[in-house]
Amino acid sequence: MKFIIPESEIELTAVRSAGAGGQNVNKVSSAVHLRFDVAASSLPAWLKARLLQMKDQRLTRAGELVIKAQQHRSQEMNRDAALERLHEIVESAARVPKTRKATKPTRSSKRKRLEGKTRRGRIKALRAKVGPEG
Image (cartoon, rainbow, N blue to C red; front, side):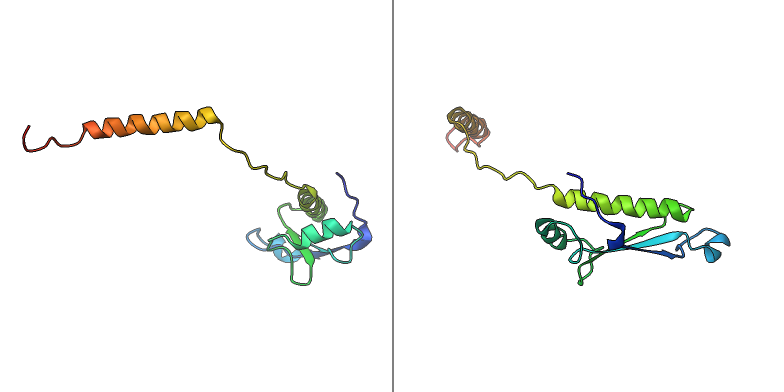
């Protein structure tokens, strides 16, 4: 299921990258902060609820999804990477896991399990120490 997120709902900010990178890292704002307000978005209500229930450190208490992309050297590539990650998060929240149906073991599997336990018990009984008479 593909969800279209209007660009007006996404706030992109260029910031300086952290970490190593030489002199260029101090001059160029190549990293991108993406902010997406889940509650105020145009996504369906059920999807908003699933996104807000996620146990994700990128989700703020205010219900904003914050993604920082700084892997690439160019701002455009980091912007694309951040948008791609946002879409991946939304797609993963849209996937509803299958409900587990409780099953019972078959009669033959129960029988095989009990036979195995009995066989094991007999083998262990043979290892027991012999009494004082014999």
